[in-house]
Image 1: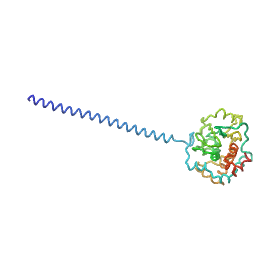
Image 2 (image 1 turned 180 degrees about the horizontal axis):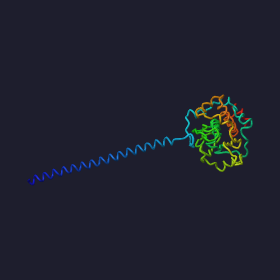
Image 3 (image 1 turned 45 degrees about the vertical axis):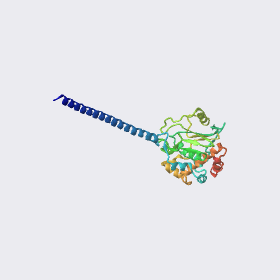
Image 4 (image 1 turned 180 degrees about the vertical axis):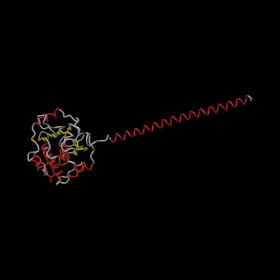
Length: 298
């Protein structure tokens, strides 16, 4: 083989080798890009799941969760929008029968409780408590006549207490906006009786003022700016036994139903107590037939 032929053949081999090396480099780049692209896709999917999860929040429980279950708008509107005509027709409802004709509240004393420049309604309760479970329905109705209570979350009272698993609301992490009063709820324990909210020293002082024996203090406790005090239930919680949130809310509009006679009757008494705090404002609420009917029982 001549020199020229050997040079030509060597050049061809070098060219082929260079082409193969270029091909290998291209393949490596493709593999890196594919791997990187796959990793990126996985990361994007994972990130999407995280965002969706955060947006939805953790699954809530109607039993042990302190935040409860967000109630449907239809249920919330039935609770916060009981017609004035229904409230007036119910009047005292079944409250006098439950309290055996005794005043539903005791008289308050001392300087008015205030917060943010407004009279303060202090509520101390617990999520496990069946009597609180019943009372919260009445409180939500009454408070909604003076402002906006939102959002409404549903829970059930303790499964091992009286009137077990009563469908109710929780005021934990519920806001309230009113130009007439400040509502301060303190849910001391969860449904499972775990600690939830600690009353402040000032709140404990108010509680101790009206219930001096710590061994006999019970739930619910409500101080209406020291104008009136509620210690315990004012209607039979058993009327709600076995009912769902929706069934209870739907029954409120029927003034003849036992649920409405109990819950709405209780709401009228609480409304009357709030009117004592607000100097009978707003006048259309505090001069209503329902409030006038319960005044003698405050």
